[in-house]
Length: 101
Image (cartoon, rainbow, N blue to C red; front, side, top):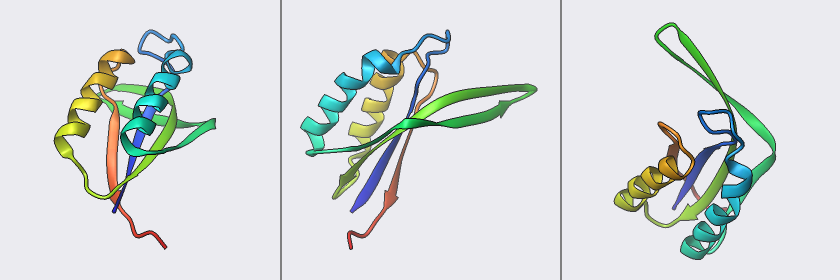
């Protein structure tokens, strides 16, 4: 079993709030595809990174789904769709092996 974590930016590259309007659609699609999700929406995390001399920052919320197997092609295509939908250069989706206790 795996825990798939999607790090969603709260704001687009232009500074506009993109997640408030987009989240219901993302939630519906993931629940329909995987039967449920967990979303950490109340306290956005701070994402920081450095590219050359430039520092960037994002407010990020995390959405998680549990899957038996990771369908890499599906997740890569989904990430590309999210990037277009949320007007982002890159969105992180990661899978962590897990054991249900």
